[in-house]
Image (cartoon, rainbow, N blue to C red):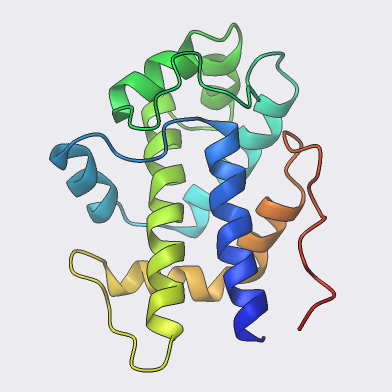
Amino acid sequence: MSLRIQLATVVAVAATIAVATPGVAAANDNDTREVAAFVLTDAGLARFTLATQKLSAIPGACAKQDDDGSNSQSIDQTVAKLNAVPGAQSAIQSAGMTTREYVVFMWAVVHNGMAYWAVSQPGGKLPPGTLQSNIDFYKKNEAKMAALGQNDPCDDESGDEEESEE
């Protein structure tokens, strides 16, 4: 896979997740530590994917803009915002996650996707606070991560990434 496609994959996943739930930038050190320490798993990815699919059917769950214009909400603020959308919390729970687990998983995918890209660069090193097991998970599931970005039901332009450019 070319470097351009790898970067496009990471960016597509990050953008998809950011659009699905505004406030992807962790607002405080505790949130940053929680996201960095979160262990990505196959079971978690399956639940996250199912929850995302269920959320796409709920009006308001795919809001593209944050009401207050803030890009630095805490995990708690993002959870509260998502739970305020009627049906969102039950959709996530029906997929086997709490809303907090959903948000932390989402942010962990972004964090580790960017770290994976950084490690794949010539001379790239594992960023401080990043778990090697999460980088390995991301690499193993890169196609699934790309599918999340390219098939996002919340993105009107999903699938339009620069796939044809190499």
